[in-house]
Image (cartoon, rainbow, N blue to C red; front, side, top):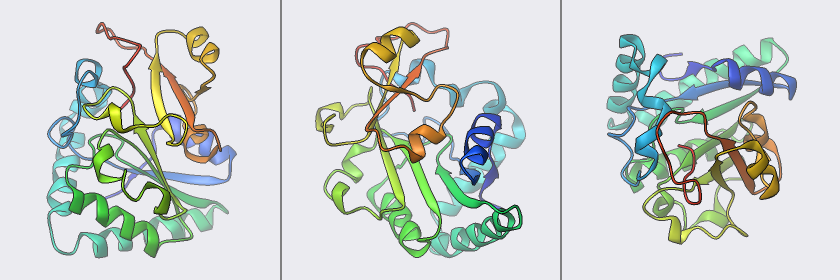
Length: 217
């Protein structure tokens, strides 16, 4: 795989239990996040592993690839390779779009909608604060593409929590459960596969955040 990456430990464990091989696609954080707001204070994708030279270089190459005319072709080829690997293990393939970064333009978001449509036997999901690129056709998205709106961005006013699948960050697990959200802090398969629209994560960062409006990236 040239564009996709193996899932990290958090993704791998939960998804394999559900019968999936998880892979991810990442872009440079912040630079590709036009609607980021409070999340910039505690963005996990600007820390630790994501600052290693290999990770930085991989995400820079991915970003360059998204700007090419053959991005859909290249991604489809990568998905086919990953799908064969999953099949050898007796698993189905699931792709997390953006373990870092976000949809930086309408054209780019539309390319992922097309990729999902062309790979109906693969599951796709992603968190995004680029609500504007999905809000108009939210109810018409490919059935295998699960878009999770991230609270805490510049366009929270467009999110209807009773209609849109969304994710909010909480200060404690008690607060999360009391609000009626599913805790995906340690198992992202719940966000990707479960029916619930209410997805929560407990914040473990060191920066002070406003938890009434803040969310994950």
